[in-house]
Image (cartoon, rainbow, N blue to C red; front, top):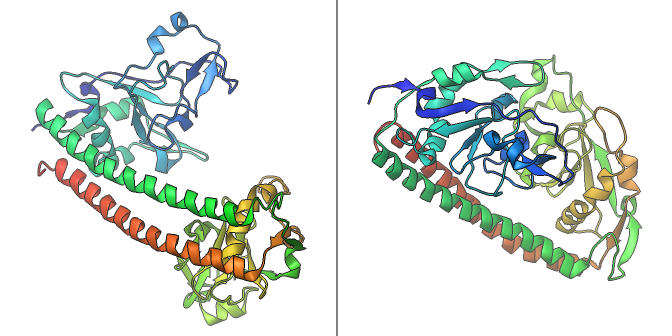
Length: 388
């Protein structure tokens, strides 16, 4: 197969309609950058414009059209999704490109995997223009990227194989989401909504049943403070839920020269500011933390697993009380004064035992999802090397 320019495979590649839009729900739905944030067309993340279909007929998406992010942060440039007819009417708005395939040359179902392939993304990266707050790639440079595509019958075969692999991954994602929902359901069933405390549990300030402290960061200019054997957890790592690994580590001197303390396994961590403010996790290892994290050590009246899920339920009300400007933050004083229901310890531990069983299932499903990710990557690699 000989290489052709990417743009030659499409009827057009163009930007969208420049029209004022809002979130009122009135008028016609219009695509936004957020519409494809999860690499699918999300009809709940659109804008609306006071347009009649006759006013924008040339900008209405057709099934098979591909939306492509060409203005975004660097890691999101090239994100794409296929429009499959839902919502039924959708206007192509600014800041996403629409790629309409020439069906005699390229199937949309194959095109989406071509765009997501490692080889294409590497070529695309050469044309990304980086600015202070965002990056972009021009339509001209996108069109000029050299690609090779097999005959239509082979495109269809490859797309069907990759779609089946994606379907398996989606099934695992759905199963993981159901396990998360099960945990939330068990919490509400056993304890009720902590904001209203319908079961009438005893309510105390958190400082009466837990000790709180924050970590600290040594001077980054001193290299010998880092690279040691003491795990050093940052707020961006709290998405793990249970933190069992950290990206950086401190030396003994680094620990001594900062306000960080070595916290025991089972310490509950709360992100106090930054992009993950309000995130809650538990330490699965002995570690130190940076100053953006509040470490909460429950007394004998609180079980750590109960406290983690309790704080996650209360997180929205906590976040509503953030203070500050460009980087809103939570204060330790606010956390200490937080009023928390304190059920009998045996009830808390019964909950902990139940969610431990769910956690075991999640580990199995996570492992399966990782294997499927590897399989999908391998299939894509082979597909675009002509080996599938």
